[in-house]
Image (tube, rainbow, N blue to C red; front, side, top):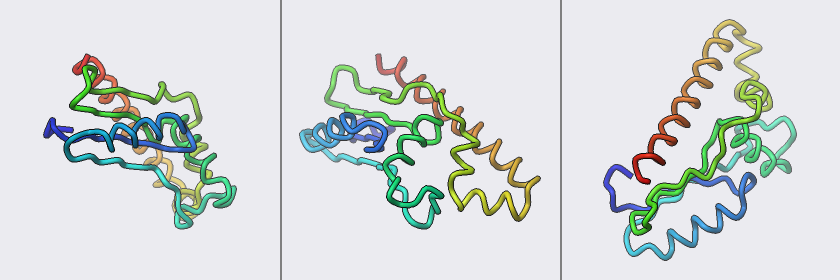
Amino acid sequence: MSYGYVYVAQIAMGADYAQTVKAISEAEAYPGPSLIIAYAPCIAHGIKKGMGKAMTEEKLAVEAGYWHNFRFNPAAQKKFTLDSKAPTGDYQEFLKGEVRYASLALKDPARAERLFKQNEDNAKERFAYLEKLVDLYS
């Protein structure tokens, strides 16, 4: 996005199918380079609900504020669109739902607590930054 001429979108199909389709359509129609970054849980994440619930995990990631959906379209009048709403889910519960995080909490609870808090704070900062981009490109 800092180049100013690249279409960039972040998507999570399980969180917002319509936003996913819109981002892919816009990227395909854009007359320059396009980049779509998709949140796609894999088996290494260790989703406790199982990989059959990957789409649900994507939705939870967006609701918790772990992942943010947005579109930056240099060709549009409104160049930046933050498609995610402010987080409403429980960030820490989201992290506990994946073995990759839960295993750290079992090995070193104090370190895990500190790192998980830092992770949540970083996610809040990212969302605040994206909200500033909305104002910047309005």
